[in-house]
Image (tube, rainbow, N blue to C red):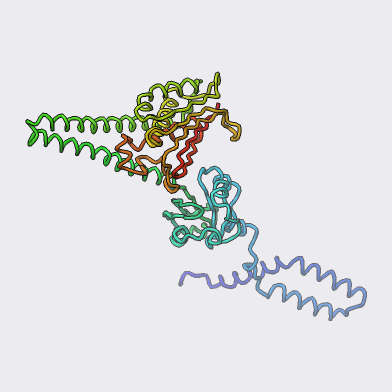
Length: 431
């Protein structure tokens, strides 16, 4: 304090008065001209003019300026905006997943096309809670806002169908000079990734392992039991030995069929997205499948009717896979149809469904399938009657294989069944 210049306060006051006078210079000049004109026109006396000018002069330089209440253009430019700029919008549009941009009040300020498609009820300018009411989603966003940091979470929607989502909310940093870090963030980027397919695949994989293990364990347990019997009480009983060996052979064949179907399904899935490019004669494939199944047709006393309306017509497809489709469908109709009944196999041109050229129809007159089971028939290891399926040497994978092959060929699979009337399966394929 001892080193302070005593004249400094006076100089500071002088500078402030000088600045105020300079700021009011144009007002004072205008007033001077007005009073000069009024005095020249004898509207005012000299004393009145001087007094009036003096009052205005004192008011102009003595009243403190309140410039801090009117922000400059520069200050306005430095303030963070409540609306994303063009570069931010382009960034959001470049994201493949739904992206929402919200402010601190969780009002939607922008959404990319993916978000508009996934969540069409959202509307820019409305609070996000108006359209997306899931508390887990909103809590994640509010946590990011409260902490001014990244927050992640998961949530599930049940309408219109069960869907799982992963959400991430991060602050959008606006780097502008002169703006404090705590004041930079008014916007938050919310990205939402649909995890439904991944969850379904994980569940299918888990179910597949569990079901495959169960299906293999049953015949293995049976084999071990018969081996123990043959090595013990029935060691010297030739009649029992032959009987047990016959059963063991059947169980081994069952495991072999199951492993073959599992390998077949795996091969098809590996090529699921590779559409076949070769041309095949579907009529010839159907004839070959029927000839291969002739022993079963004869032993089941089934009357099989074959109607081929595709003579000379070729379709794009994999020969082995389409043969497997025809074999599986016809074999199922023989196994699960009425014993001594009729099986119809028809190949026709498709005229009712766009994008498809041919229709394969396999129909039996068996007991039919209750309606509640029909949608699940193409699931792996799904059986309407487990004991009947095993007794008829079914693996529970036949229609799952058919579905995957048809899908790879960009076709469609239709299953209709009426109890006590039979089952009809249609495969539609493009040319």
